[in-house]
Image 1 (cartoon, rainbow, N blue to C red):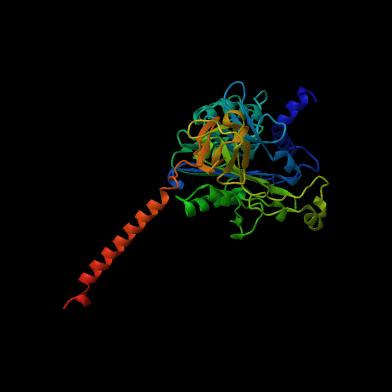
Image 2 (image 1 turned 135 degrees about the vertical axis):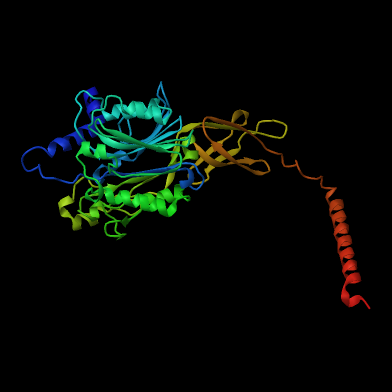
Length: 454
């Protein structure tokens, strides 16, 4: 493998979509008007649209199911310049490919693909612009500015952006030369491979309204917003991405018209949603996200069952897609805790456990020299810290938001206890007090009860 292989691999999306644009214009058996496959559903909400006023963003990726293993990867990178980046990636790429990014400036970026329009020869490929924007942008304005630099038009998209610092959200609809921007600090923006801007749609040669195959999902986003405005949180975001309501048939019907894509139920071709990601403002600030692998709704795809129904699509590299539970992924940092006694003496050999509040993520450590336990890579998030002390387990709630070093003071077995010879006297005194109180209460009730008065 050389640099040309690496360059070609990273430019695959530009090449793929550019080829589909040329393919439709070539003579011969491939010139039929094939409806392009859908590729993502996404939304972002903020302000009065959400439960707590902070933004919530979600996206699922639609791909052919034989490509699934390549996309089930999260990485946390710290470039020598620019921002640290957490992203879901197509294995081996320097950009996401699955289009889900969080940087340490608090920017979250997702994408849904629109297709391709007139090609700008000599333009900068999209994978270079998006990686540069995520690495160097600290605001929505900076992100938009970088993405508009020398575009090539080969991979036109809606880019959803949220800023954890300002709570503002936006969608950049970027064609070849045409583009549009929606931004708000109070509202809801849905996206699903549908060009909502008239000038961008015209440049792409795409219809608008019900003539566009993705418009049913665009309508569904608006329905969900109207139904749940003011209540949107991460849990609802998960449900949105797994939604099966078909606005064409006006019924539950998982297919290409639904936010959770099941193209296999429509045409038989094994294609649709293969993951789901949701994040809110609080999580984004510490570079953490919810995610699941498999259909966003949780339904399995079984290749043998599908092959019996559609032998024409029994591809040899298809695999079963069994949805995994929702879990959190985040940037990882060094973590340490020092356990000391009441006099500050180090406590060695103490078991230390970090338990995630929301998932089954757990870290186990043991204090050593100096009473210190450490872990080289703890994912950011909220945890219960447990330290096994000489007189029981010390517990406290902690938030890991970066490199973390804690000191935990643990009482000795005798601390907080009364000397044994004093305990009987304390017990006797308590008994006398209780008896006096009971006698006084009985005397008062007896004296003033109506039945006792003549």
